[in-house]
Length: 426
Image (cartoon, rainbow, N blue to C red; front, side, top):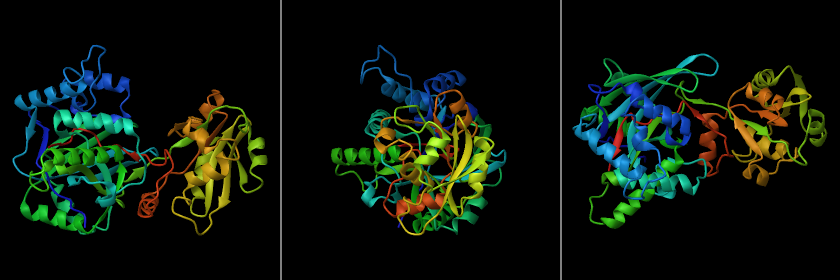
């Protein structure tokens, strides 16, 4: 059973700040330019705590971005820019955004905590491997601030009763609200706090029987688990289920209409031995795939998407035109083997001259822009560009349930959960 629990949140005080000015994207999608922009937007933007600027004259452990993060946290609490809620609660978040297709959607989420343990005993099921570097950075920040600043994004399956409870909560005046600049267009956020015992119990009980899957934030979860083990070793007599043994999560229903996963398209950099045209690629595929001519990359993507139920289908662009590559789906194999991106990697990119080792070494670039396929080839940045359909939440769940991992750049849950909606002090 999942042990989803409320927490005593630390959050921005709407009497002193406008929420839209102080939120930030998760650290792992913040570029240097974006960070500078957020610094200038509001002196109290959460990025100063979550992903502050490092300066050349920093002294590690004395005056660096981690010590500054701790100082900001302390001073903002003193000035009541940040306030601590007086009891444990859940936080319901409605996030409205524009999709790539132009429609406006809303995703409903819940800020809560789960036990921070190694994967083998975790309430959350992962679908990817992680790198050491980001975890070291996050652990240093957590040690300095004793706070989890950014939640792990996870989805649940099997908690149907919770929908009505959350619907009841998300009415009336919100505790917090504001607009932020999204990746595509302006996004609106509303936050309600749940603190009455009956609702808290109903939410926890509903999620207790659910299966939970990481959508985004594997690094953050592993950091929380490492920090929990570190603190427990230093304080073995601390109460069981102390705050430091919990992980901040943002949970949403896997079948929520607002759950959106954007595709990440593959751009093949020029190189020796790599297919240089549609004709060359077609010859290497030995008639396994059928090629259907298309006007351009965007048109090929539209056609490929219409075939998804019955075929593995990809848009491909080269200097001599655009087409759809397709082959029928086959029964059998593991959930990972049935992913479009896995088939593309093994059955198309391999024959095209791009091995898995080459992919690991940087033979591919990536874009989420449908028009980026044609632009990359026309600009000479790619010799081949492949457009893929997005994976589904069901596919992510199937891969995680099988104990497998997704190929690199398979999922991009959109929009990202902003940092700063609520913090979890440890």
